[in-house]
Each structure stands twice: as C-alpha cells, then as structure tokens.
Amino acid sequence: MATPISLAYQPTSADEKWIEVILSEQRVVAWEGAKAVMSFSASTGLSGTPTRVGQFRIYQKYLSTRMTGPDYNLPDVPHTMYYDGGYALHGAYWHNNFGQPMSRGCVNLSLENAEQLFTWAGPVIPQGSHQVTATKNNPGTLVVVHQ
Image (cartoon, rainbow, N blue to C red; front, top):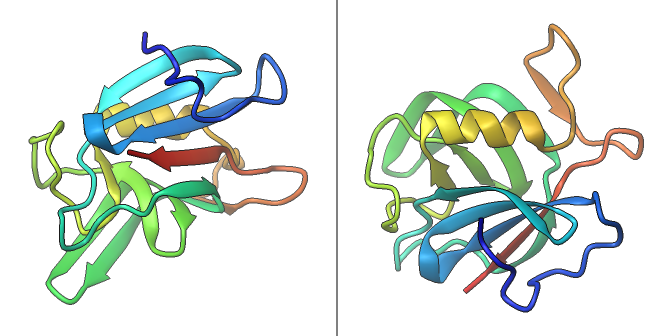
C-alpha cells in the first residue's frame, strides 16, 4: 500500500478513518490512522474544472443519484459521497480512463472501487435507506485533497 507523503494529515488515533486524494498521482488512498488500507486509481478534475484542494468531510452519501451541470446530465451515479458542495467521490460508468483527469471537479472511481470506499467510509447508511446525511453521532469521513 501507499506510504503517507509525510502524512498529508496527522490522524488523532490509530484507527481514525480518512481519505487522501493525491491529484498529482490521480490516486485515492483510504487510511486507518497511519496505515493505508485501500489504494485506487482515480480521475479528478480537468484543468478548466479542477478538483479543489483542502480538508473536507463527507457530509452526504447516496447509493445512487443524478448529477447535472451545464454540459452533462448523468442519471444513477453510483456510490456518491459529497464532501464539498457539489464535489463528490463517486463511481463513474461513463469512462474507464482512471489515472487521468476526466471530471468536472469530482473524484471519479471505478464502480468496484467506489463501492468499496463507500461501504468503508462514514457516515454509515442505515439498513434499507438510499441516502444518509452526516450527524454528530454518524460523522462523515475526512477527505484530504492535495497535489
């Protein structure tokens, strides 16, 4: 698994879950403390629509949702995890070019990788529900986006 880049984030405990998005590598790494537990190729924002750098928390998750913009209308986008306004980590069924910038700012993952990350990350979706909003008792996982 990946080694932290002088840890992009300093976890508060050995089991704290956090997600690192490394734009220069087009990679997503899931961490538990300082231990990488998953690592995937991703597709982040194109130069005209870059993925924002910073620290965020997943605030809402959907098993699937419609995503729209001025030049796209995508139904049933799977395993969507919103972390900064309209920016999300999610599955992408419309391309298979992971490892290259492809998006309008979101972090695209393969369908399989998006499902794995979605299941692992908080907030936890209640059994039988389609979506969840993070709360104090069901917090969202930290997302650290950097170059």
